Length: 99
Image (cartoon, rainbow, N blue to C red):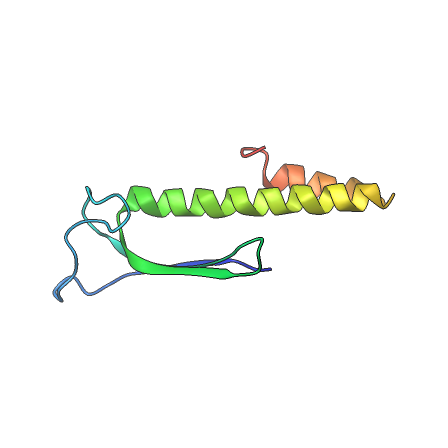
């Protein structure tokens, strides 16, 4: 399943929360929208205002979840005796900081 994370700017002259809806301690700079597919098949969605640090945390969380899925797919291919050389090389290059 594909998960999504999007960020948008907002009109600062309109009424917006002064504090990030995630950490509740920093000023908001972006609107975020996420759809995360859970292992159970359910879709967890969220939308709100966030600060820059929380935006980076959301991206790191999505990257970690994607890295985990890639490792699981690699393990399944390996169990089926499939050639995983190219897949493994791509996974390690893509996620070298998270694994």
